[in-house]
Image (tube, rainbow, N blue to C red; front, side, top):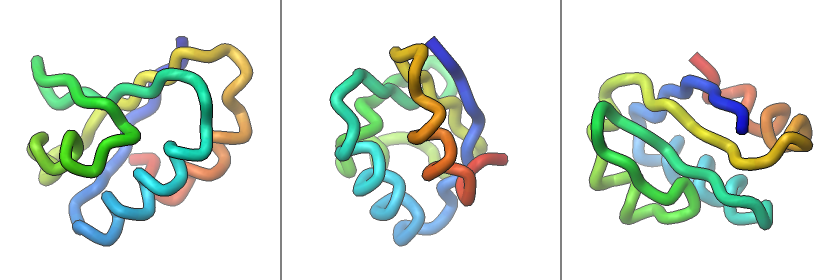
Length: 75
């Protein structure tokens, strides 16, 4: 598992983030405090407080391509 911290303050950023994560087969979750959502679900992300940095947990050891795509969102 790998973790990164991202900023998704604008709704357009949330949409782009979800479009990227949906292209990957492995499990990706996003955390805001004690709340957890599927990072591939736009409704799940909007249920979190996106005004604060969020922690993305990627359940794959071979995810460098995903991290490279998410680079614009990394805090």
